[in-house]
Amino acid sequence: MLRVYFTVIIIFALFIVNIILVFKNSQDDSLVIQLASEYIENTIGQAYILPISGPNYIPVLDSDISKPIISAKSAVIYDTHSRRFLYEKNSETKLPIASLTKVMSAVVILENLNLDNIVTIAIDSIRVDGEKQDLYLGEKLSVRNLLKLMLIESSNDAAYAVMSYAKSRGINFVELMNAEAVKAGMSNSYFIDPAGLNDNAYSTASDLIKLVEYSLKYHEIWDISAEKTAIVESSDERIKHEIISTNRLLGLVKDIIGGKTGYTDGALQCMILVTSIPDYPSKIVSVVLGSNDRFGDTQRLIDWTRAAYSWK
Image (cartoon, rainbow, N blue to C red; front, top):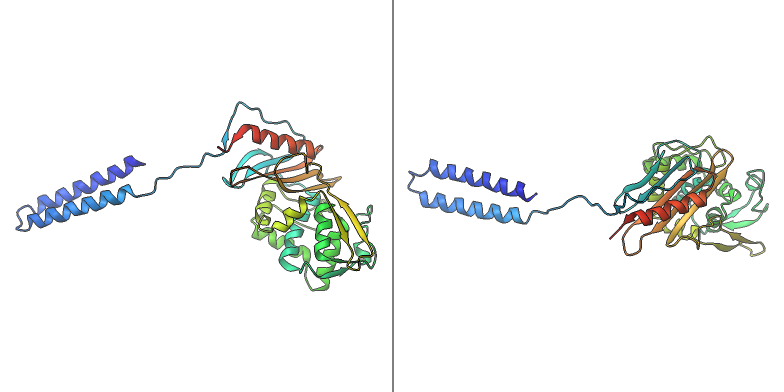
C-alpha cells in the first residue's frame, strides 16, 4: 500500500517540475517554485495520514486439525464478527427445519404483539401435532409465557395459540413470517405454519444464519432459549407448567448464548446453537439439518471450531 502512495507522490512531483520548466522564463519563478514546494509538502503530508487497512484474517485456521465427521445432511459454522463461514456442508440445500421455525415465530411475536396480553386457549390450539397436549381448553396465558413454552419446551400448542390470538386481532401470522424472511434476506426459505410441523416448508443452513443474525437484536429470544427449566403459570395461577428445555447441550457446552432444537419425521433432527468467544467480540453460530444425532453433530462442530481456529 505504501508503494502506491509513494508512486503517486513521485507523479505529482514530476508534474510540478514540468510546470516550473514551462514558466522558468517568467518573472514569477520564485512564486511558482514556492507554490510547487508547498503543494508537494501538503501532498506528502496528506499521503502519510491516509488509512492503511488490510483484510481481517481472524479467526485463523489450523488446517492440520481434521474436520469432524457428522451425520447431518447440511451444516454450517459461522462467525458473526468476521462474517465468515468457518465450516460448510451443503449449506444451500433446501430442507424442512421443523421447530427451528419457532425462532422466526418468536421474531414475529416480538415485533407485532404485546407480551403482557392474555390469550385464552381455544380448541384449535390443543394437541395440534396429534400427540402431545401442552395446554388446556380455556386456560389463560400471557403472550410472554406462550413464548417461553415455545422456545424452552418447543411447545407446538403454544405456537398455534399465538397464531390463533394474532388472527383474532386481524394479523396473518404466517404471512408475516414470510415477510420477515424477505426482510432478513432469506431468499431460500418458505414458512407454512408457526411450529414447523409441515415438512413442505423449507429453509437452508445459510438462510438460518441470516435468521439468527436478524433475531439477535431480540435478546429475549436467546435469553429464554438458554433456560434449562422454567415454571409457567396461567394468569389466574390455577394451572402451573413445569417445563424442561429440549436442548441437552445446556450445561455441557461452554459459553452458550441460546439455541433451538427441532424434529419431525421428514426433517429429522435439527439444531441451532449460538455460543460466544471469550475475550473476543464475536458469536459462533452452529446449524445442523437432517441429522441423526443433532447434539453429537453440534458438539463435534463446536469442539472442532474452537480447536481449529484461533481468535488471538
